Image (cartoon, rainbow, N blue to C red; front, side, top):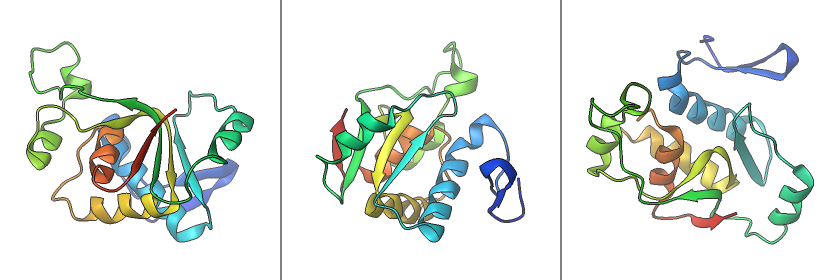
Length: 157
């Protein structure tokens, strides 16, 4: 990773975090922190680089949403945390850290990571709540849901 968060050529954000799939949560938290500190925005869109966003539909949808407390995306509920090393997807999806920190075997509701929207106050809350954790669990979308579980308005779109 970079020594400090900075914008690079071709609109790249270089972050001071390790590069790897299990570090995506750290990358997302660092990117949200960068956005909070450097941009004036009402809503923040987190999306994967292989996702397509229809901006006209998204903007139309946001016109009907609250300006604060918003956490919008495709809702995932009652998803079991991968803890068993014998599960086929264990190497990639294991999340013992989440289970340990939040004392759960099933994730709290969260928006699937392919894309979700946070209002500014929820983006700030994600960063501040993440800073309180003893460690950052690796499954980013589930982590964001847990950090916002007690305050956000969840909008399934």
